[in-house]
Image (cartoon, rainbow, N blue to C red; front, side, top):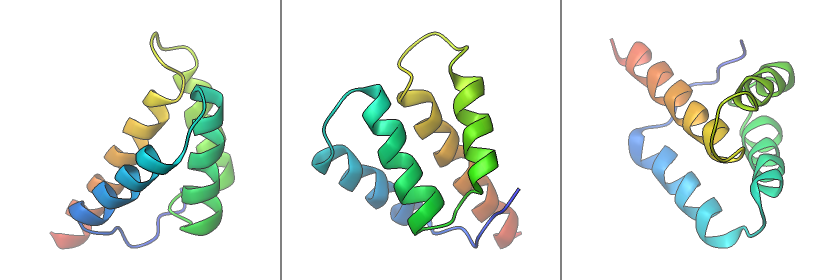
Amino acid sequence: MLFQPAPVFFGVLWVFLRLGLTRFGGPVAHLGYFRDEFVDKRQWLAEADYADMVARCQFMPGLAGGHPGGGLIDIQLLAYTQSVN
């Protein structure tokens, strides 16, 4: 997996707050916004890793756009806590 240095908690919070307030559309649109932001722009995840995460989330019940968002938050916070320790 490609992990860049993780931002602090408020940095992750700010990114998701900005995406939530300014991006509209259904779950499929959110997947595209997440990919643009986290794979292309911020390079927090490699393309293949993002595709694997989205594919796994498709099997889970609930919103298709919500599960990858939660997974991205978990990945960044885990990377941050490991870099601090």
